[in-house]
Image (tube, rainbow, N blue to C red; front, side, top):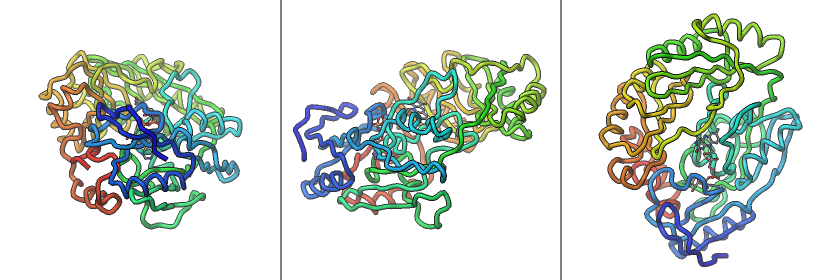
Length: 388
Ligand SMILES: Cc1cc2nc3c(=O)[nH]c(=O)nc-3n(C[C@H](O)[C@H](O)[C@H](O)COP(=O)(O)OP(=O)(O)OC[C@H]3O[C@@H](n4cnc5c(N)ncnc54)[C@H](O)[C@@H]3O)c2cc1C
């Protein structure tokens, strides 16, 4: 079941590895690690194991890359059941021939990336994508989940239908939990039809205020875009709006957008920065009220790059060796606009100087949830907010 390993997770040495290929294998491993009091860190494709804090210990690396496969694609019901180690690219390739997509993992014409990772890693890391403007994030598309708890018990939540009974929603708790609550082994997602037609309208913006004003205007318009993305470098940038739908309606909507945005707004190809990671050795994930975006952009140094959803006020900020003071300042600006700044990735010196997550209002509730799921703190201990 366990083999010796000389691997490491974010600099923390691993002693053993396991590569389960089924939910019951995962349950066997976790029963064993519970009996031996071993800490377990899950790994999908391993691309985001440095997000969050380094684990306090990582006795066992649970490699889920063998737990793959589409279990069921109910095309008529727009529902997909898939194993957690399945690459997101497989999800895209499976759905495309049926004219469907998981709105998280879609690849638009002209898009370069990123589309790596596995289903389980995507649930646990909860990465924001451009289509969240219209479709939300993982939690909005995940309708069911199978999870193995720290003690090896298998739990199911939700189901294979879009309409589910109300109640305790395990899937939503797991989104963004960085492997600290349970090991996802299977997920059920709601799907959407691939739109018949798409178009992009882009406009340069010269100030944070202008970016905010336009994003708010788009939000209050009738255009109903799928994405409202901003690429910001120094003191200016571009706002790009994705419109999707039936071919007949697209033209009127893009015309309306060009009129609404004014200036040099025009219909263009998908910009080459669309959903591209920002450059920098330190990446912050910032979320503010959409009206606070300008203040956040203004607080950034000229060397910084910001990219993300202007329409929702959620951007990634790329920095090079930032001071702790800069991160604290950006956090204060975000807090003044009902927001947060999370250090997604950074060199060790930065992560030692500043807390990755910053203040979290619901921390005591999160700690109670952790105690319920993993009272002995064996799943990725210390990786999440407040050392959860
Ligand atoms: C919509 C979207 C937006 C994206 N945006 C970005 C972006 O802005 N920047 C970027 O760099 N990448 C981005 N990506 C890529 C994305 O971050 C990775 O694909 C994914 O989050 C990590 O997958 P992984 O398998 O490599 O996870 P890993 O790196 O292996 O694991 C990530 C975390 O999840 C935990 N984990 C892994 N599998 C499980 C499981 N089965 N159960 C419980 N916990 C588990 C791990 O312990 C770890 O904490 C995006 C992807 C999508 C779909």
